Length: 122
Picture 1 (cartoon, rainbow, N blue to C red):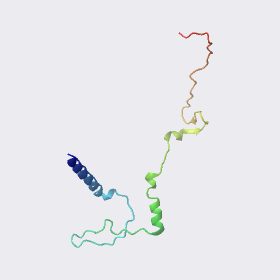
Picture 2: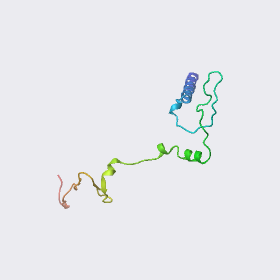
Picture 3: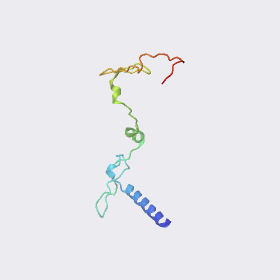
Picture 4: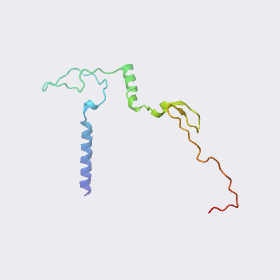
């Protein structure tokens, strides 16, 4: 039984790795790639490289492009659309003045009375 489970797990792992290896190349990000001469197969006539004619990125250009490659999807852009309405911040514990209706929150208790020690609560 352990042999069967191990075999199924190994086969599943191999199939998973093969599915990743045969991913659609059109979905991969564009990059300068390696230099590829227009070499074609003598049998089929198809290009031998995945990106024929691409030039090799060298020097300063390659460094700058590689440094900024992931910036678009890694950089945080934390902006709340509701913050666009704020006209004036009142400070800690106070509601800001915003465009639109002014909301005023009244305290839940208007006045309080002191209860003496002799009072009994039913």
